Amino acid sequence: MAGGGGNHWEDLRRQARQLENELDLKLVSFSKLCTSYSSSHDRHHGDSSDTTPLLNNSTQGRLFETMAVEIEQLLAKLTGVNDKLAEYISTPGVASQNAALMHTLQRHRDILQDYTHEFHKTKGNFLAIREREDLLGSVRKDIESYKSSSGVNNRRTEVLLKEHEHLRNSDRLIDDTISIAMATKENMTSQRGMLKSIQSRVNTLTNRFPAINNLIQRINLRKRRDSLILGGVIGVCTILLLLYAFH
Image (tube, rainbow, N blue to C red; front, top):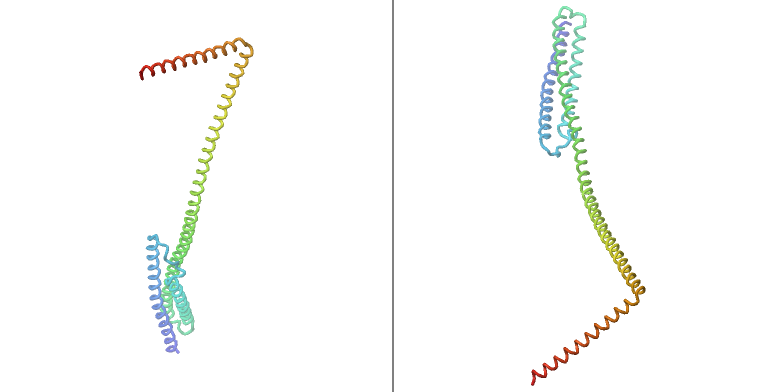
């Protein structure tokens, strides 16, 4: 009975050691995966390129999910083996070896606790990086969308500003033209008023002083007569000179 119990204990210990070795290898690969992704993530953000796909759609993301499930299964199996070791220690008939067995069980439990802590720590770091990348990817998309819409808006704004400036220049030109036309109209109205005033004064003087009007008319007639006499004298002299010159 003791031999059979000893074999059962050793069989459980072999299972525990095998699971611990598998967990150790898986955790090393899991840690390398997280480190590799973290490095590629930093290089990607050092670049200005946005062509790298998000982690959820990458091979690393799928590999991470697969390895996490495998490690959780191994941890569950190792927990079950440790529980069986604890049940064996509680079995009557092994009390004389209880202290040594408890020490061995505690060692396996410590290893399980260390592996569980390391797994959750690595998984948490990986998920934090993925969440940060998802957030940054969303922010980058929002920024690109804003830049794109801002570029279109800026071009539209420039066109509208140019049209507005053209309309303002046209308004100024029209205002200047209207001002010139109004000034010209006022000047012509003023001149017409002055001419009417002068004509009215002349008519008033003529009507008031008829003698002056007659005197002016006589002067004009005398000037016309003198002009005719002078023209006749000049004509006769010219003819005489021509006759003398040809003779």
